[in-house]
Image (tube, rainbow, N blue to C red; front, side, top):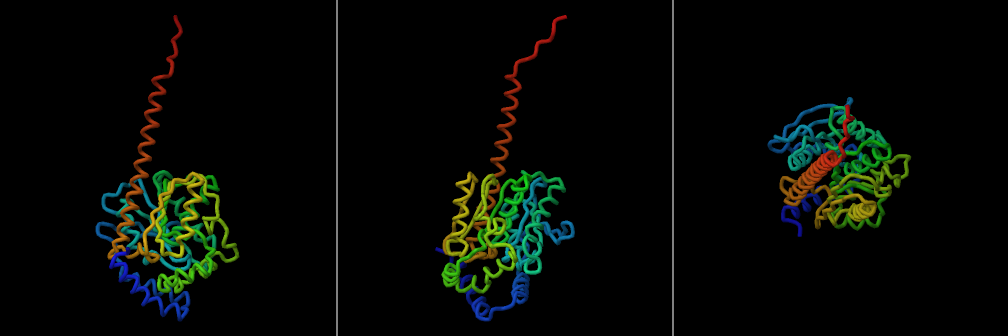
Length: 328
């Protein structure tokens, strides 16, 4: 059962978004609203903010105290591909960086409708290539994102794989949007359960803005419809009350059937974007702590594999027959 803190959050969101759903606000109004809400967010304690840019694209580092310098997390924020920014997700990204103990690069990728597909994906690829150029090895990079950003992270993996490029060590999807094709009946059902939150955000319309002239079922728009072989370990977190829930379960089952190691964590009765409210919702803190556990597990498995390979190489050299020197 959701915590009392989450129930209060749900009531607050219902009161705040109900009028928006009836008024059908313009996208510019929604963008201003989420930016205004970001004024109440703060970087977590012992996480240091450093502004930067990636080939002219606005970006920032969130650096937890004591994080190793050789590993990094690339974060892609949510917002239906049409809103959100570094400001709106700074607190969440900082909290995730601290839980994972990773220096984290967040980017302000281009948004639709001004910049439709594949602009966001191109920017994500640009940031990944930029990290490689900075000297980070692919096996030392992880990618994460929430909602549309989670779907974008998965699309980035598919894009890199199909291009024959080295993949990051792992990816984390916080309520990832894996299918832009959303049935109206499902939307209406979940909107009632979430007090019109998702109806107010009109996410299906936003998907169309991002897709523009590309079919919504394109695999780089809807990763659940892609071939999912040869991907790195994935962590997927979702609530069973979200409109994205069933699609995430389909994505997970399809990825596991293709041999991808997927860790699926399902939370009960939580609203979409519950991770953003980690300061006062205990389920959000729990989710971020579990993300940190996943990251440490990936690094541990990576280290164990390297140790085994090193030992196997040493044993092979010992077992190899010695060449006899010619007699003089």
